[in-house]
Length: 450
Image (cartoon, rainbow, N blue to C red; front, side, top):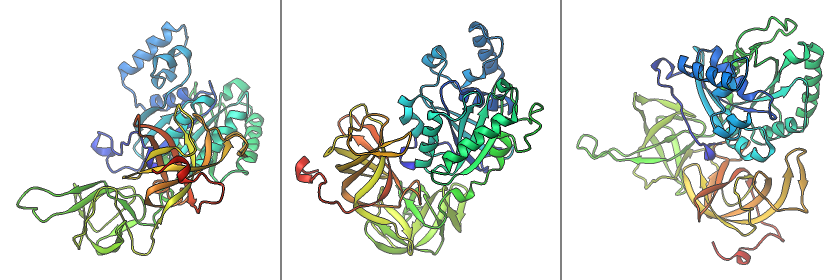
């Protein structure tokens, strides 16, 4: 989700990769399912690591008494992770092939690090869910699939790993596939793929497996290079959150006033009639500018500068939208929130809100229920929302927000809640709908004014 982007890198340093399509993916799986090993194998087999990096992990593997090069050490960067052999924090890795460039978020599998998985998966086009072929579909597998569904990740790739430890048995793979399909049928629809593999030995990761000739599908890299992601972004509703107003202080551009930002949805064209929110004033696009020159049209997720035909008072946080596809505007918002804070979510609590480039404040009007992320059941008798919990809540903002539902536009439908005292992000929210508050909600007067 755009609101909780931690790091964004849309281009790589090599000039040949600048205009290539970017695929963001996250990994998920239980402890010791081989997530870090799989990423390390991808990086190694695509020749995306340097010789000194390989020498360093080779030496580290030897010191640990391992008789093989432990590729997981490429991603388990924290000392605690290396000591315990598990992933704790989210590790981001970048690599590219001649067909595509990639950002991988290696997320932890522990239940107590659900918030880390949500952070890593929030902007992903695809999720890799690893399953140990010896264990099959377990509770953590269900949990990760449900989180992927809540986050509306469009593509789900189930990697049945460690097939070498079950003698490359096709029946084991087919059983796991059937079990996962039964789980997925109860969730929001995915573009679902299954690959049997051995991350340790490299079977079906980058190269075809000689040990599983019965599998006739693509390798993991082959799938990642060809999976269709162009339709993952909303190309219908035009959304442009203004990030910065450009006013050059030079005689040549003395009358230039441009609005810089990243397109969050739709296609903008020169001459197109647009509205500016929250003012509601209408105008037309005069030009669309980039460092490489002017364009006749631009689309999500391009970063551009838009100039308008009329002089309108516009600042950071305002939104330029299409004339016929207006967003929802409301102060009363219902959302699914993943709680990240160390202190529990407080009914009547006041938090800063960041939605796209707009900042405001909000009060929590009601905690409707907690969600059991392992079963998706509603828990209404216990609404204590602690770190890693997921809940449905209602908030009221001090100023109206212009947004779309999260299932329509992940960028426009997401926001974060910030503790004003510490400036720490404590909640990641996915907007369900605007809401009319009902009897029984916490009244503003109960918690004071915002």
